[in-house]
Every structure is written in structure tokens, then in C-alpha cells.
Length: 289
Image 1 (cartoon, rainbow, N blue to C red):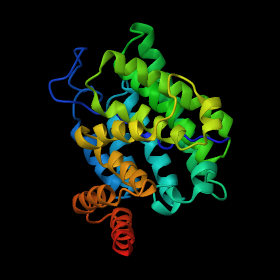
Image 2 (cartoon, one colour; image 1 turned 90 degrees about the horizontal axis):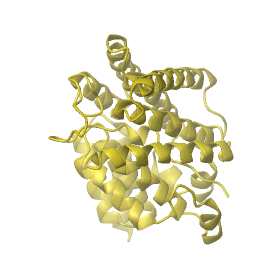
Image 3 (cartoon, one colour; image 1 turned 90 degrees about the vertical axis):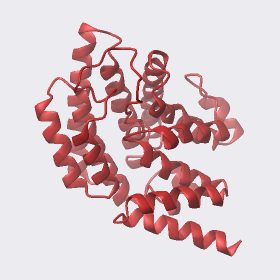
């Protein structure tokens, strides 16, 4: 009975929606405004240029020491690099039921994971500090969501400590719900319950009953619809939501959807070996049907 958050952390790197702000964010607010340097960093991340992306994130974080998002992005760059090296973000992983439910073969890089944990700790410290002034601070809630979600990914997918991963997933989902309650128009936030719904919905009926928590009962269709909201309207996370939705579509044999999403990613990031490879696989499988 093993459950992954599957990218809940990186998948929750929330971005702004034009005209949306329940709070009055300042100019540097990464949760509610588009920050060009962060956008460049995420584009580099999607191109698998991890060190370059990390440089952009670290530079921004050093100039905005009061913002936990910078450290979140640094941590995400280490996590995404490890997921990429382990082949997690591929149809080979998603379509292998044993790996999908149990995690990677082998162990993650210890030095990379140490850097990841350090960045997560710094992000959480900054977020908790902001909450001392305002318990409902949007930047803090976002960072706490990401910190818990990234730890869930590391524990369940990479370290294969599934109970710890589940505990972190529950925390992340709780923070995401609180964030959405304040900011329902923050479309990228739907990727949190979306991934949880899809992963829990992929379990057996018995496991779904036991694993119910935080109001998530497991519904693959609903989960894909929620992730699709980010894939359609997200900012920083739109490409990431597309790859997750495409891989889920491959699992559900929705070939047309998978091909469309992967084609869009391949065209947007022509230097990405990941998107080119996954698009070729999706086309090949569809042509065999």
C-alpha cells in the first residue's frame, strides 16, 4: 500500500493569474506576479539545464532574502534534476506499475539530496518567519506547501520511505487547501489536489479506502481535470503540468491528448531531449493501434 505525491512539490510552484490578488502583493511577490528572472530559470529547468536554472534562482533569492520562493525554486531545481536522472518524468516510469507504485530502482545522489534538504529548510524557515507577522501570508503558505510536497516526493519516490512520504503529502495538501481558500483563482494551485486525486485514484479500491485523508478520496478523472487547469492557464508551472497530464494520458490510453500536449512541449522547448523523446514514443504507440 504505497502512495506517492508524484511531483506535488515541484508541481506546486504556483504562479500568478492576471488581475488576481486577494492580498495586495508587492512588486517582488513571486506568487502573484510574474518575475522575469524566475521565468527564465524555469524555462532552463524544463530544458534540463539544471545548473543554469539554479544560478538564476540563487541570484534572485540572494536579492530577495525575505521571500521563501527563491529557496523553494533552488530546492526544486535539485529535486527535478534527480527525478530527471532517475527517469521518473517519462512514460517508461509511469507505465511501469511496479515503479509507479514503489519508486525508483536504486538510490538518489546523496550530495544532491543534501543540497535539496538544505534549501527546503531555508524556505521553511523564511515562511514561518513571515507567518509570525501574518499567519495567512500567501507567500508563506505557498512555500510551506512546496516544502512539504518536495519532501513527500523525496521520501516516497526517491528514498522509498512511503509512510513518511504520505505524511508529507497530507501536510502539503492541507497547505494547498488553505491557499486555495484565500486565492481560488490561482489556477496553478489545482495541480496539488489534481495529483493527489490521480495518484490515490490509481490505487486499488482497498488502498483508496485506507488512504483517504484531507478530503482526497481518489478520482483519476477529476485529478486529470484539475491538473488540466494548470496546463491550460498556469504560468511557471504550465509546461510541467503538461508533461504530468501527458504521462497520465498515456496511462489512461488517451493517445490524442498525450500527443497534443507533448507536441506543444516539444515545439516550445526544441532543445529538450525529454519532450522530444516522449513525443516520439506517444506517436509510435498511437500508430501501432
